[in-house]
Image (cartoon, rainbow, N blue to C red; front, top):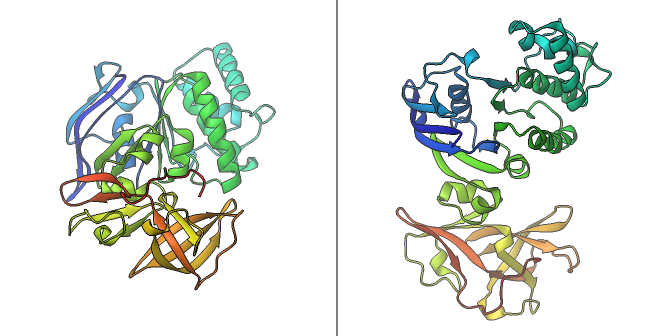
Length: 352
């Protein structure tokens, strides 16, 4: 492993921002550090960078223990959420700053800065100042400045948080393509799951100072290892008594379940192919989601969410419907697993 973190602990007063966290990262991977605000993501990033010191535990980069290595000697590039550009410096001078500190020659600095201006799509902007740039352009300058000294590891703290939605989507694709081209090991912090799924090779989900799960976006989505991960990734509803649902009667009392909209098929009376396995429900609300309808439906005392194709007849609040639940993520205090509806014989459709 290129990065190894072993039993990392960091507390602030009574709060454990890093609670005995361990993980490894292979060289060249793009890792999304995902979780709710206050979960410990930025603390982990700052300890890797050397900006904060762990109370205990070890950090290894390329086989070398770096706990006592100063931040400026770790070979790490850091991009802050607020860009942290020097307002009195041009784009060129901002990118050149780290190279100047390293006392590189003028010709070497010029060659490197010119290369990065080209790489980051900033050609023609080198003489501008930060206040003359858009948010997306400023972020690219910050990215280029972090890359200028040729770091071995790149750390990004909420890199798109201060950018509007349209530009943010463009920058995600640009960042992923650029990092793949460079081949630098990169970790970026985000609380946006869509961003993490779209950009990262692997995701590490952190909550309450603990590493909940690490894996590919699709593996984490399909096989969550904890109730927190199941509820955090994707849209979901929680059910308190899954054993009361058709096809899930063997679930024990005290078991709870998380259900995602794509696990549910909803139809007007007589529309579903296996009505005996379906619950009776009442539509409470309907939302247009661009490529589908999202339907809030009440089953008994519980409300769940389902998707419905735009090609099917629309539903409205108050409609009586059949609700076929294909699968649940069920859990109790000790165990968690995926449960399939045992009353239906047809495979779960992909487009419902």
